[in-house]
Length: 406
Image 1 (cartoon, rainbow, N blue to C red):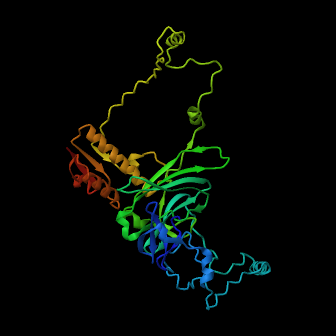
Image 2: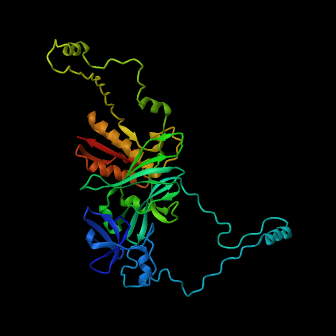
Image 3: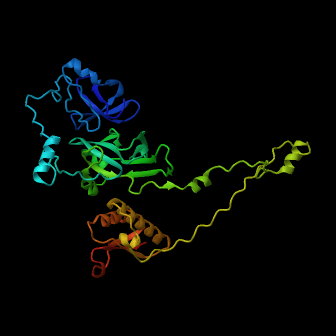
């Protein structure tokens, strides 16, 4: 039994979708879209596709984009796949080759246009990369789906983090190019505040490829301030979804010289002297001139390198992208820019505390206020902060925050 299987309760006629494996004996089942209940595994049975033929209803094929609970009761007939009495609209007639040539000859220019809604329509180019897509299975139920819109295979693992459990691995598989997974888990809109953070590990690979790639690890938490604005058409699956790119910074290829350094050195032709072994003591022991105590093998410990001194940050730190990366030519998404700015903020704050600075000003600008809100949220939780407030308005307006340190 897996997440996404359609099951029926043995104690009744209700059907539902397995949305979560709670433990070895307990599963969570979604019935009638939003109603979820924990059920013992021995009290449910997976519904077979062929079963519909014997109950005068079409078998329901639930894959990606499935609708749990749409026909929850087995006693009800499912007419979703029966032919409709309404006649289908006639297909638009396409001109034959002779008609197209005749149209060109009569007009002297152009080409006979194809009739139908697809004439002249241009689809926007799908973004390349790996995406986390939350796809509506019903108005209140979302399926967590991984989309691979690249030309390479991807080995992936999927897990979740909660306050009660730091990490729980839920899936691992290989995903081909231009494909998507079935729902890896399900999330309920009514439980948005309690959603876990999802963790993906991604390793691109090409059969007979000429490069090895580094492992990408992406942790995605969900915030109301940015979540609802992420809905857009998803590549590959062709549906609207809450979309998050996982490879904002593509996996870097590992240089051949780095692989050569990590590979084990070839064995020398002559036997090498074991490092750290006292040869004289070992010979004396074998000849009987020393007590039968094993010769000590001393591991040569490398001296630890002293850590460099911590450098205090500037009193006024500009967090705009052009200030952090003056020579940047790479196009970054809004999420990647926000992550870069928060990393610079956290690093400067930690160095300011370590060097006993009294205060520091973070220039974050106005914008849509997302960076300012996140900085204020982190400052309000830090016990080493005496207080923080908007910096001098006559100089910065509302685009900077003054932080007074303890």
